[in-house]
Length: 84
Image 1 (tube, rainbow, N blue to C red):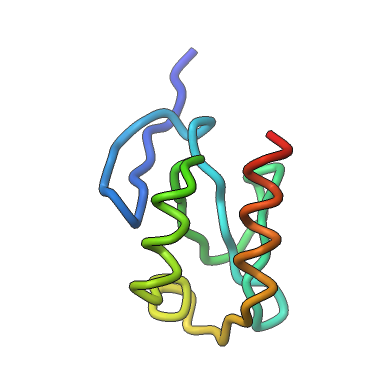
Image 2: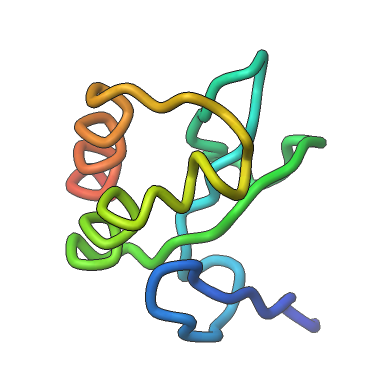
């Protein structure tokens, strides 16, 4: 079966969809799409702490999803990374 390829917005690495964390826009704020099926604008980031730090530094979530992001979101994202 074909697995869709996606690109990390931080490091530009291309890989299978399952290799990434999906972040989507929900009710005008970013959320982690654990099922990767949310029907909304989204982006993919590697399951790597360095990519998450770069995502925060470059403000890619704000730019791509056009939402405001608070500090708690990135802490939740790091926690999700540890849990996987």
